Image 1 (spheres, rainbow, N blue to C red):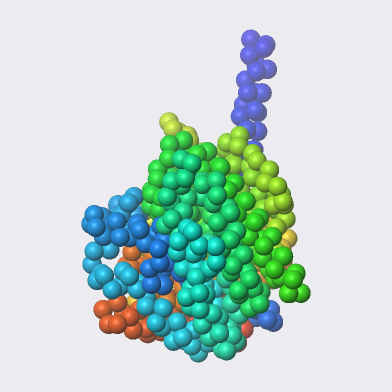
Image 2: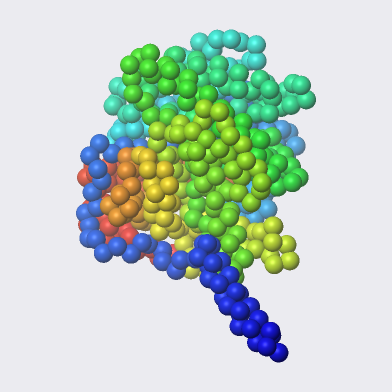
Length: 514
Ligand code: BGC
């Protein structure tokens, strides 16, 4: 009996301690939608703040010989246009793709013919910066060429000329999800980024870009959302190469390493080019972020899962650049990447809201990710079903600042809201920018710019043309005509004031009636 009376309370104590530790090292779910700081507007941004919008080549330009173009053609031929649910694409499909004429599929937004008009619109909206990507396959359409295509270079030259003539600072991305189709031809039993010569080819592309455009670029982004690319391409089957590898995240660890090597290589090439020009540049990546929270706040496993998933999905890759070693959370995988440590002049943040993680006690390693809470009919969400969560933006920016102590640029932040009178986007803009301001003032984050996703409606990958993220509406039934949405004017007003005015705050910070 004596031993039992000793054991019982201590077992209880142990359990309590365990639970306390569990709650300490897990994510909790917040009932707050906005951060609670008492400040009153105006909320003014630092001098010299960059204001602009982002795009990516495959989403707005005429089809080039890329892996995505090959996938789009295959989807058309096989008529794979389904989805699983709202905002849940089906592997190997592009939602509603069949409803659009060939011309739209080929030209996307007809930006090739209208880039001058688009850049003029950005300038008229008072943007002072513009983020876009250079299509690798446009410069290197064939595997054999050693020099970049003249035609491809001329296309981007004209874009740079236009940007510079209108005083828009270019922010250039090198890999935004698409790569040349030829990279996917098997060589030594490997395809794509796994090919032994992948880095040699990528290096040649980056070298050509640096040599030709390096005089005009100060801000570079080597990779856009590497983890989204790997999850969607190799685990979910949603992006080319449309694979669903067995073995979970561990099966893509070597690919993450390859992308980290690609980043190191690109960083070194760009820096060497800038040094030759006696120029200071900033090189980083764009990281997709979400606030990861438990689906059921009271469930310890949901909370723990949210913590681990956030670490794996949001921070592992950035940590790797920071430290030089990629450690894949929840797996024993660990690899040092030579020359990588510290090669991040700024942290590029893309923020898109909240994920709820639902675990299962019977199968703790598999869990569900909800992009909104299906039990809450009042939750504000975009038309893709992504929960709006401004407060999470503060959390992400604060955490990025605390972890890396580097300048931060927001390279993407936006919402699928389709109406021309897009009240929800206006609310989104004001509340998210207020959280940026909070992060600058209360977390002391050194945030230097904000790019809205996107300048114009475009091809939303496996979701097709349905979702509308643009400040400019594109009419696919009427010669791609552009019309600014209401939010475009609000964004202009914020840019002109370099602040959220009391009037803008009072009008838009409360959730609109739905
Ligand atoms: C990507 C964009 C995409 C946007 C909206 C980001 O994940 O970088 O290409 O269109 O989110 O889904």
